[in-house]
Image (tube, rainbow, N blue to C red; front, side, top):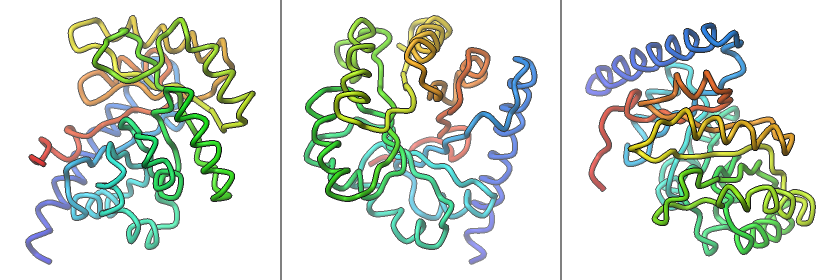
Length: 230
């Protein structure tokens, strides 16, 4: 019990600082901080880190891998009915069944095959997690996401043809480019397609993302510290 106390204190302080920065960025942009959800990304960190964040009032979390989330979150979700879990990593089609069962938001919808399988799994499960379409705004070959020129057509296919609950967009800008360009592109795409949510911005650039309309910022390192080696 006492060994956990320093961890809980550190994470609570980190969360308070990140929340203060979100509020300051929102006010500077003339926005209400309440319209920006902090997604605390706990990938590679154990359940103790998540419990510490829960103790500090955090309720929205992000995980990159279905299997890792399955090892941590079912008991936490049972204990905290208001916990919201986002999948922020690439989803393999063979994990779609588990993803639909566990996650409340799937931020990485990015290809027709996955869209079709998710639609079937949601029908079978009677559970409909929200979906964000991941856009590869930098058109990087090594990165997942639908290409910008194909995004409108894909959104229409997933939302209108398959009936998926597509409510937003997500992007991860290239490391070596000005993120504002990518945030602007994503925001315009969301407005054009009448999508309410924009998941953009991480520990290094979430304040800029808020300036350009982010409704969800994905912050891991600034809350939980450096990632644990797998």
